[in-house]
Length: 366
Image (cartoon, rainbow, N blue to C red; front, side, top):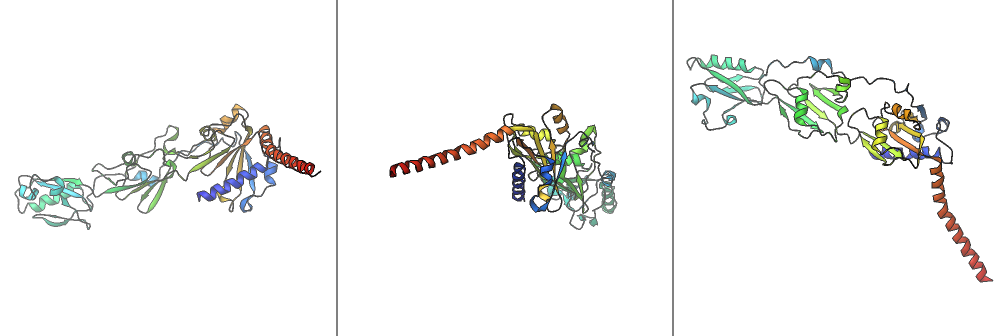
């Protein structure tokens, strides 16, 4: 897919170059209207103006159903390991010996949610809170032990959330007795800030995918409400290797830029590429080409910026580029003329050499 996009970008740049081959000729809306691009898509031309970039950025809203979920109490689930202590009765509490670790003496909750305990037998523990299970154990042990004092601790949790993608720690995280919030899970997972696409975060719960833009959730001084995670939630943070904008033409460092957030402006994109080349660039020939990977379905759009005045960069700072955009800076007229001469002069040398050879051959035959 990336190679196809690069090929389309190349064809587009060749087309743009064809609109400004002659010295003094510049890219214009008229030249676009006369052009046909790959797939037969026509080009829509728009000028980057204060009116075009005046729309404010809307902060991301957390889905109401996620905010509404509250963690009231930890409920035992399959896979939990419980350390059940019956005070003054070590033969029941630690049958493997007091020197063993807690997990060794722990009681596992089976996949069907059942739990076995001496003198109590098999009970359905999954779904109970810790106090509820303690009360059941005390009641049943009362038939064998006088006034049993029972304590229940979760020493291994089967309630987990899974992390995938651009985290540095992707091990499943246990949900503690006090609950686990989204920000806590992300903090423990540690985002790979160099390679993560913060705008593409997905929380999957009960078969539903919730797309959350982690970048815009906290924009404009707004603090988004935190949410509690449920057992089985899946957190996916994509890598940004497919989220790129290409800066080409007369800039100091032509390159592709990866997105870390959603608010990469045209000014920032040009700045990361070193800015316009002061010796070769045409300030009035800055373009953003959008939609080159979807020409068969919709016309591409070319946004034009006249960057010859300082105010233009204030406007460009509010124009947000998108993944897949191509930022192209055209060459100044004198640059194109110099390049034409650079290509022409070697050709004239070859012609002169051929002419001199022909002349010498003719004289030697006289």
